[in-house]
Amino acid sequence: MWADLAPVGRDQVTGGYRRYAWTGTDALLREWFRGEASRRGLDVTSDRAGNLWAWTADPDTAGPGLVLGSHLDSVPDGGAFDGPLGLVSAFAALDRLDRTALRRPVGIACFADEEGARFGVACAGSRLLTGVLDPDRARALTDDDGTTMAEAMAAAGTDPSALGRDDETLRRIGAFVELHVEQGRGLVERSAPVGVAEAIWPHGRWRLDLRGRADHAGTTRLADRDDPMLALAAAVLGAREAAERHGTVATIGKVRVRPNGVNAIPSQVTAWLDARGPLEQAVRSVVADVGEAAGIAPVEESWTPPTDFDAGLRDRLAAALGGAPALPTGAGHDAGILAAAGIPTAMLFVRNPTGVSHSPAEHAETADCLAGVEALARVVEELAC
Ligand SMILES: [Zn+2]
Image (cartoon, rainbow, N blue to C red):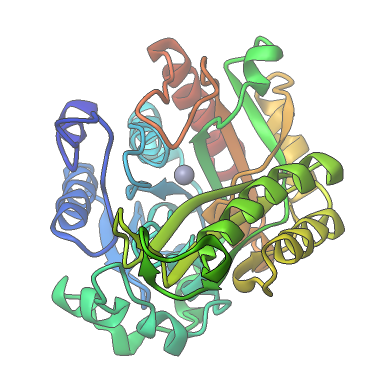
């Protein structure tokens, strides 16, 4: 499976993956998912948001089922494991089981547009499925070329007019377990190959619209300038200081400059702030401080409150896995969106030796990946056999 996935969407120069929602690369990844599902005799359906579901049995008659899964899209120049590890492991776990022993359907879900790299809203597929992302807002989201999500979906053969909370699909999910590469070094510190998720930090994305006046870089006296790049600098430094002060993390990792010329004072700088932390109030304080530093009010583009996974399910899985450690995480996941929608949900993490993710340096050793498969197989035995 890894050999088939490896070349899809890989940038030759950086070695990172550029797997964006509703592109040709995305279509190849979906085709891979359908192929692996049909090879195993699983029925594949697409929901209203374009998420794919592969089932061992009909969840409408024999369900609701236990669903495993993750996503196949990536951030710009992402690593190989974030997302795909959950899907490869789900298929591999199913291969290890005697399917005649299943007493409820098992599904594998491939969520659309998890990273939000193209249209700016992370977990768009699961947010649409659960109704927390408004379909009109989703359809109107644009990528950097001005293409709307509706246009991109239609071009990929998925009907954007069908978007909206999908109760028919939600009814089929008895429980959801997402296996994911760890995005930190918690398991390295605990010397464990596999852990279970405790909670997802509250997190969000804000847009900073910084306006100035375009002018000549040589003839405009400093005193006469209205340069929004200075506000950006204040925002970047302010974000770091505020995050340290409030015990959170904060990042300005995306910037758009107009007109973006070496010899032109910018007329406008748009920057995006990502802020997360264990406490909601601390994250809110950071955003307020950044706005104050930049002299504007940040525009909230998305917000996810703190997500606690089902404690009973978490403890049951940790015990079934021989006392796997529990870890909090600063990363958002589709599992968090489903948990917030009231679905019993758990996550397994697989050790990442560098702790680095959203980068080509993201890694997991083969032995740890196999431990993850083993763990997922045991989860299925625990919950579905
Ligand atoms: Zn992921």
